[in-house]
Length: 167
Image 1 (cartoon, rainbow, N blue to C red):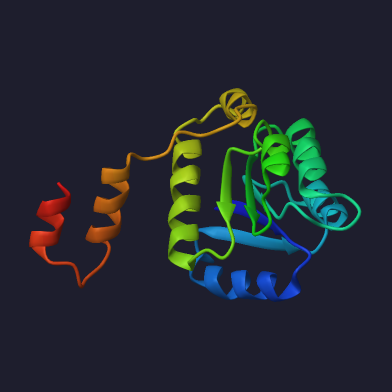
Image 2: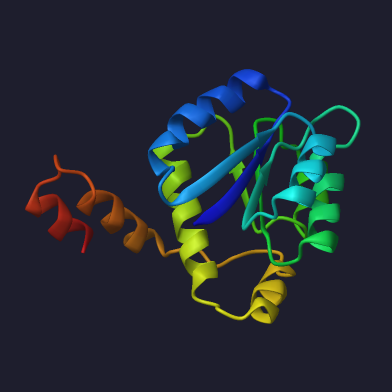
């Protein structure tokens, strides 16, 4: 089972994420923290495979949290989910987060992105390799065609003609 942690000071967003990710409960154990301090305390007791954080939070912001996560838990993947990403903040988080996602995000897109990252991480069985990957600034993404094809195949309403057009 994969362990995920979502960090955001917006309690409504955390509640929506909890509801959206409920369907993944058999493969993911998901925890939620409403501050960076709460996230660090949670990580002490429950190490995670993937941490998703907002950037703008009171006290300790997402950049500082990502720095600590990278130092203390180098094998954990680090994602940003933010609705307020300016150029300066993006530059600060670029070396710390493997993926930056924008709010709002559709639940299906978020889940697919998380699944791909965790599947890639799962390819590496040794903890040393996972720590090395954890030090990377970015993770490779699927080519656009592959992502479109994966989305189309997962949608029952897509015709064979539409799939062949993607190919």
